[in-house]
Amino acid sequence: MYITPKIIDKEDGSYIVKYRVPEECKCEVEVAMVEEGKEIPIRGAKHVSSFVAKGNAKTSNEFDGPITANYLTSQLQEISKFLDSSRDNIEIRNKPINEDVNELLKVMNSLKSLEDRRDEINLTLDRIDEVLRTYEKVYDKKKEAEGKKCHKLMEESKTIAHVATRVEKEITVPKSNEAVKTKERIKKFEDSMKEAQMGLKKESFYYYDTGVEASFERIDEVKEKIKTYKETLQKFIYYEEMFKFTESETNGSAKIIDTIETEVNWMYKLWEHIKKCQDRFDEYMQLKWNDMDINEMEEQVKKMRTGLQPIKIADRKCNTFVGISEEIKRWGIFIPMIADLKHESMTTPDNRHWTKVCDTLKQSFAVDNSLELKKLWNLRIFDYKDTIE
Image 1 (cartoon, rainbow, N blue to C red):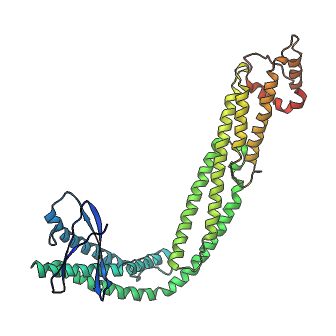
Image 2 (image 1 turned 180 degrees about the vertical axis):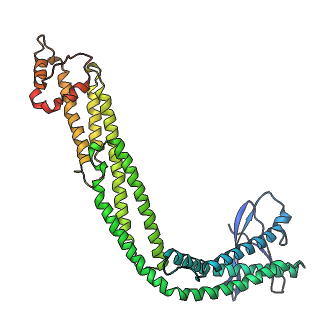
């Protein structure tokens, strides 16, 4: 929404601009000079104002009210603090910038902050200077302390700019040397990431016999390692930016870390699936002979097999994946065999069918409701599928 302001030309080079808004909002105020019908932007003439329904209009809207006074104080304090810290940070005497890359980067970062904020600080000080002149000219109020502080900061800003230029030249050689060293460090880091990737397949969670609990514990430990890899990578990316490398030196390491992290996350999902399967198998082991819902059990085993399909680990021939696949396969054989053994045709007066089963398994047992599925599983009847059938 555009708000048409009322502009009053005081014919002394200054203007009074008034505008009113219909509701609470924030406004962008842009000021331009019109010359020969063309709008020419004025330096720093884009402002933001806010309007609230409640409040003291006099103290909020008056030029010489507390809001303006607080603005002057806070801005002068912030700029003073920034310039003081910047002066200390770019001072390179007694700093081991040739031995410690982090010390050099602190200086470089402070120089960058000074450069980034130079125009903004100068603009803010110019604005404050104009505000103080308006105080004196329009309201006959002279704020000497703020005026002295403002002019002092203007001079300090110029002085620090000169010092920054000198320091920038003095650190040219250390920057060049550290850039070369940083490339070497990044290369060594990438080599170490390649070793970590190669060694990943030796981790215990790639072996099915490790078990769920121990695998989760080791995966968590590896995830912590990955976290440190990523922190180191971010440090080197920061170095790249500061030394302004023309090409990224960290892409290789970043891709390797991403591959490692993706693989470990998939292994975690695989072990989650294994835990669900084993928990269900443990439930089935406790079932009594007359309490088994064979159809439901067969359906669950099919879901277990299907649940392996979306898991995208790099090597499906690894011991863990093969281990759970084979266990699900055994249950896929075992449950239909139980269904056959529970068929009514197995019950005969002379119990001859069950006698043959016991002879095959070399184990005698009673077929009644005290018989748990675990008994038949431990006898590995799935290994005698062809014989029993």
